Amino acid sequence: MKRGRFMLTMLAIFPLLTSAKMGSRIMKRTHRGFKVNSGEARYGKHFKMKGVTLNVLDIKISSQDTDGDLAVFEQNGFTPKGGPPLHIHLYQDEFFYIVEGEYLFQVGDEKFQMKSGDTIFLPRNVPHAFAQATETGKVIVSYMPAGKMEDFFKTTDAWTSPPTTKEIEKVFEDHDMKVVGPGLNID
Image (cartoon, rainbow, N blue to C red; front, top):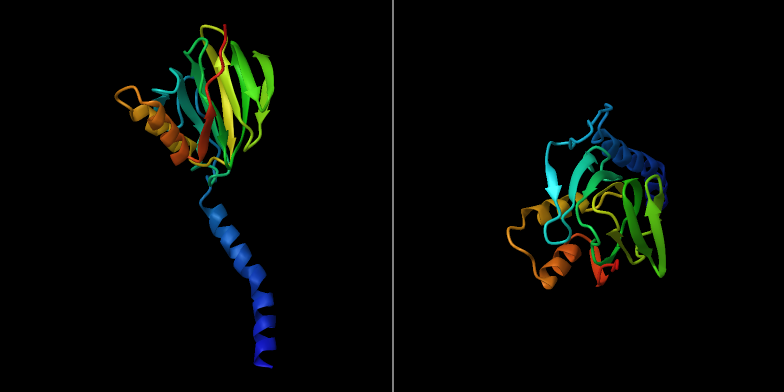
């Protein structure tokens, strides 16, 4: 009889425990809208992807704003004919919106020519890479959930000397990504 009463009690309070957990999670979210001006970053810091590309990233919407559900960056491309190695994100979907310039993307076995105004979706666990086809470019990139991407960009920004291939692979691994091949080649 006591076991039956215990089970009924647990069934009755389980929804309350779940909603309390969700409520505390929601309480950590930003409760006010905000604006990030053009050319500025959410917390005033521009991140250079040293050792991976020459690109500069600005956080526009931080994982702190969304309780880790989303991170949005503006990436200014200064890596003509270059980009990151072929890699996968273990836990995040990603999309790019091309603001300026042209890019070549590989998603799985498919390649896509991208230009200003185009959008591309990169599902988690699917190998992908991109290369900038023009002298400069600009994209909006978003990660869902945010994962460890802000920390990844902070880490690459802190490098003071060119990293080895092993160091690049390790920083990808440390941030829930895996390098699975070389970057794209644009002739």
